Image 1: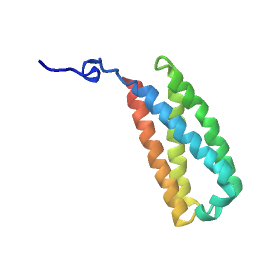
Image 2 (image 1 turned 90 degrees about the vertical axis):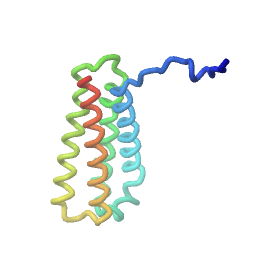
Image 3 (image 1 turned 180 degrees about the horizontal axis):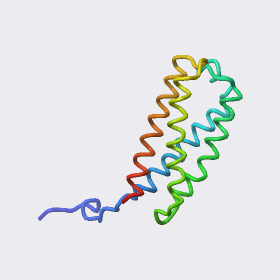
Length: 133
């Protein structure tokens, strides 16, 4: 006779990947935006960007969390859920252009721009896959 634990007999709950990826993106984007807003003066010399640019980016990122949260909370994959994906893709393209063309970023700043562009590209890919299911 075997003793079954409740975890072994409980049905597995299916993860809603659309909600997961949009929700996680909202958290990461919101925290990144708040970081830029709260630490713009300290980050400016480290990243080689003007504090006003970092403040503007912070405001943009905080605003972008709204469609991400709406997409994460949607009960179905509504066509409007594609809006944050398109914003993410535009962000990736703009980040790559900025990293290559801007004369001011420090090496760490360029690295940060490319790193966050890669993270956003991954989110856009995962969100696209989830919306197509």
